[in-house]
Length: 127
Image (cartoon, rainbow, N blue to C red; front, top):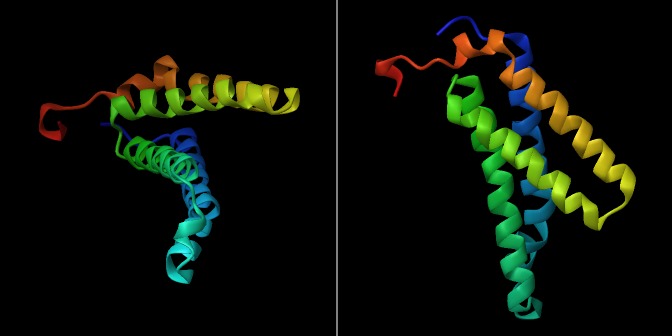
């Protein structure tokens, strides 16, 4: 594996930061309710939605960490994660859709340029 390109480092950090901030933002109400003893106010749907959101945020962190390690599958996780956000942004406003779509295109270009293939080419010892 060659030297890590700066673009990979930046995209990785973007996913790690986004996942971490999302975990804190979406997880805080759940943690607060658990320690406050107010979990009874959470209905099943709200709890399931929160857990799914937290798992999606963990997926962003995993993708970012393994991008740093040069794992090819992490490219697909990150692009898929971003594509998912493009889709769910359709339930928001058009500026959100455009922002996520532009980020998706930029991330895909950065991760799948031909010059990135050498970095993501795994050696047998790394698998």
